[in-house]
Length: 364
Image (cartoon, rainbow, N blue to C red):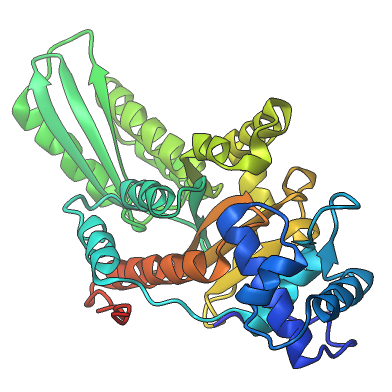
């Protein structure tokens, strides 16, 4: 599932050391407490003495897979230890029937606007994982206008509805100093859909200038108002739109009881453009899930965290990413399974095919 580069293959660990490392990681994920040799006797299911386990812990610490917060404390995983766990020791998780049902219901949204679907998916992921979540869509091509709709409100106001060919919908109320009739509004709608549909942001201004040569002054004023709004919409889509949710969840984890540390991360997550620039967009066709542990993150603000993300295909040359940010003490298998399922569901949703049935967790 996770096609990451194995950077730590230079040192081959014995099966016993791998069992101990896996036990330390999974215990620390559950408890956020350092793990000692006595606890490992039961957790690792090894028929060896406590002294042998202490020696193995010392070796794993010396090799950089574990860390010891204090001299008398147990061990915790290092970023290198988490990486080996993710690459080789982590078991793939299956979602429960309840989890797959919850995700499918959230993805079967009646609303058609792409941005609202992505925003809702980010909120759902945050609730499912109890971590701050983000979702974004990036354009691999220039977006164009698909359709204009003008809806009469009263004699001197109407609503402009602009839909792009990437299924983004925006609307705006326009008030006029003079009255406008329904036939005039219909004529304006026809002209807009004849002249400005299929145009990119760069093409709208030259087309507006061409129309200006033939339109009457009052008509041109109305056309200019609507086209200017369409240009604002397209300009906003030039950048990847990022939606964040559940940033306060970071306070639920013991690693962020330090208010200063928590505020620094929460502040960064609120800077949506900076977050978008620091997140890699996995290439479509590749394995859709990626895990970045601690120092593997580009942004300095994320160096003490882990980021799990999954890519999805919006179609028509567009792709997106959905993911979570949390402490390195994260249940990577469970989080990756949920993100992968949501990403697959989004790809199916935008492709108008069936949602994945999911792989229910086996009853114990």
